Length: 207
Image (cartoon, rainbow, N blue to C red):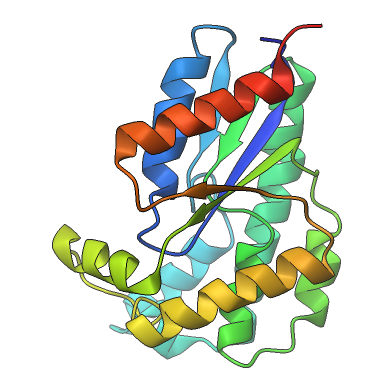
């Protein structure tokens, strides 16, 4: 497969299996090319500063800072990652995979009634993926998966917020003219991984 210098982005609501799929296809694609996978807040520099301030005040980032400030810091982290990590990796011929990207930075602030005009400006500066994959899953299934993880749930990880996020992903894919390939994330991890690999093969086969 000619995947040298290709950028693959995985989208989906919390509990859809983004990080798991990113790890699985990274393992597979490493047989063909050097792969760099970026997860969520990896290589972030702005959001951790908010976390540090909130920690000093014995509170959380969500309780300490407004949604627009949190969304703005996340957007700047994405821009920093795009400029200083993703673009150089692609330029050196690596395959790049990420489990969260531009549309995520619009969906979740929008849920909190934030004016996302500045976030859209930031996102327009990000390097564009060669392939966008969206993991489709009903919010009920995603909610059950999140509960089974046994981790503390965030305010956006509720049935109502998950359902709203599904609608907003479709909305922003449309208005931002993002072409996405949709995979059925209700299937097993192996099945979803196999479908993703076949999709990548069909897109990036040599010749």
